[in-house]
Structure formats: C-alpha cells, structure tokens
Length: 117
Image 1 (tube, rainbow, N blue to C red):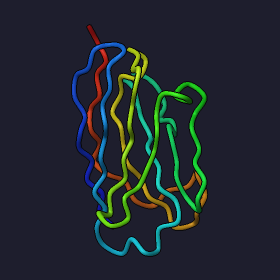
Image 2: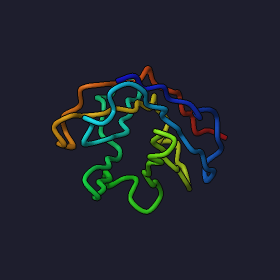
Image 3: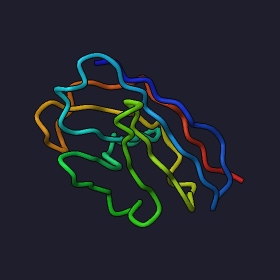
Image 4: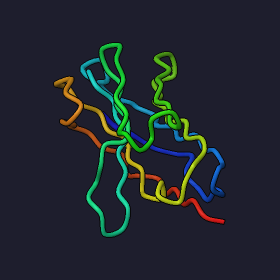
C-alpha cells in the first residue's frame, strides 16, 4: 500500500485547509485510515481516524476537523477549519490492516501545515 499526502501549506489562524491522501496498491485489506501529526519537539499524535463506519477525533480538533474518504477515488481527506497555531505540524496519512485506531502498517511521507499570521 502506498500513501501520498498533499494539500499542506501556510494558513492564517481561523483559516481552513483540506489535506488529501491518495492510496494505491492492495487497499482492500485496509480496515482503518488515520491522520497523525507531529510538531517539532513533540510526540506524534493521532488526530483523526476512520474505519468500519465510525470516526475518532482527538479532543483538540473536535468540531473543527473532519475526516472522510472517497472510495471511488481511493482518497482520504482531512478538512481542517478554524485552524489554530497549535495545529502547526507535519501531518501524516496512515493505513492499518487490523482495524485498530492505534495500529497502522503503512505511512505516507507527510505534508507540512503551518498556521501563522
């Protein structure tokens, strides 16, 4: 499974970005999809996950971020609204075969998101 993220960039506080993750390969065995992020000097954290018809969001992004998937395009999205400077990080797409939101087998290369005025 190969994952390629896009859509990162510089945005002002309060602005929006949509990240995309194009998936290819044996994606039929994937049961969970997730977006993670890692800021400088911090541990990587799970931001949002989608699988088996349910979604998960970390507390700090609830009500602002939305994870979705277009099966026809084999693409995962993360819509980010009302963004804050604390959202600044490298964002990674990931896919897992076990269906557990905290276990992933495949990772993309990441896309940088910077929230600053």
